[in-house]
Image (cartoon, rainbow, N blue to C red; front, side, top):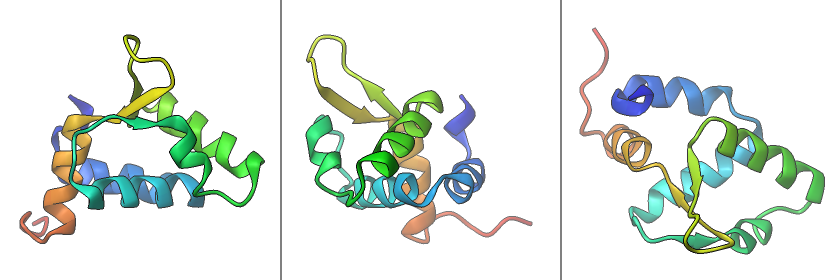
Length: 96
């Protein structure tokens, strides 16, 4: 429900640490709802500590969700992906 508004999603992205923001933008750009391995994100970070902080933020804010039925697999929150995707593709009108 929190991520039902594109502008809320933008504000959340702006507040994220740099590595978490990087992960989110890459995942939204993929425009795919397919689950991905946690290890895939580890490959995107140069520093293990920065990766751990980014993952903590993304999981705590429910931007990335763990799939209990598939250990080690994650999925980007569907509402967040949809709303931020609209904003990034310019399909969301500017705020009044």
